[in-house]
Image 1 (tube, rainbow, N blue to C red):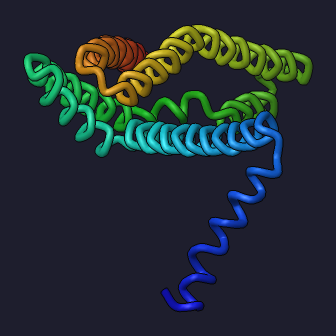
Image 2 (tube, rainbow, N blue to C red):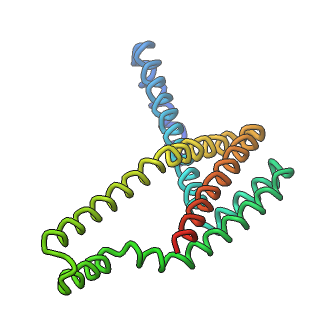
Length: 212
């Protein structure tokens, strides 16, 4: 063994053994324990980061319409193939309802447009059909009614939003676990919630159509 090799390999080992021998056994064991603990914490942090990254990726897929559908269909095909036709039908139904709502949205927006309502009331004021006091009362009443309707809609949607949040959390947990039964159950819950939301959209479509 050359002097150079001896210096690079044996000397560090001898120094480490010398330091360990000089330290009390308890202190040396504590130091080793600290290093092991630090390594474990680092590994746990890395795993947590990996899980969080996966959850973020899952959330983005679920938030993106087309990618969400493709992703859920692939999962259904793998973990719950019997429900695949139901998923396909649910996606088709939601698409049809949304297209009809989008077609009616300009009409609905014109009905609810504040500026248009103000101009209508102002024209009546200018023509003498309304007094200034009646004009003010009508505008305030309509604003109050609009605000109340918005608050009622917000409150009615809150339980469904909370349910959707809980379902997504359970879904991500099932995916992270890799448990086939858990993923199948989560997919079933997601499908039920998806069809429930579509039913709400259909009800909205009926209301818009009836008000035309």
